[in-house]
Length: 298
Image (spheres, rainbow, N blue to C red):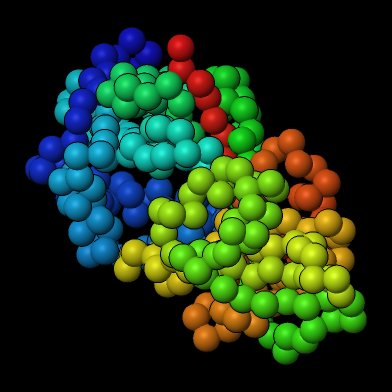
């Protein structure tokens, strides 16, 4: 097996059955690393997995790559798709990569990844990995990946009734109803988010002081997950700003209460260089869900 020739190719329709079985095994392995704040686990359900693979193969922006040995046995696979990332840059996202145990350590994963580089034709590659999967994290770092952001998650079991705090007032609005003053405040503190406002409908909460001056805001979007996911609805905190730390807690209580009839699952992405905000969110009860790594391709 040391000098065995490995073929890397695009998956075909007649591979679906074998790939479904292999992906079931992959999901079981991934679940063993999943932290309690990971809301992205799929159902380990053969029918759902098969339907998911079939749809991915039809999508022109998705790639399903397999590795096979000289006996034409599938020994690994990788999936990827084209998207715009957290910085709104065109990106190839490596969604999954798996090699069967007896072929690990043979650089099969590298061959699969190189194929993704080749067909993705994008200058940035990103991937997500569980913070508990130390082995995979070390491999990605050796291959030149660096941490882009940490996804934090929190499940709310008890909702506190929103109140207006002394010296502060909170109100809610929608992104398509923003005033010039509200847009300006967002633009000053999060230019990238400001540019994304016309893309979709966002829920926005502002907090004012006694002098009616803006002191903070939070922007959220409620996302419906695919049927194959166990968690059906997630509220993503797209952007949040406060002139002092205590404002964040007040904004969070407002978010949680407003979304109580839609979901109990909340997430936020914290950039790798924002250590202070990462510590703040941990104090507010958020835990690591997954890590996003990136690599620039020359």
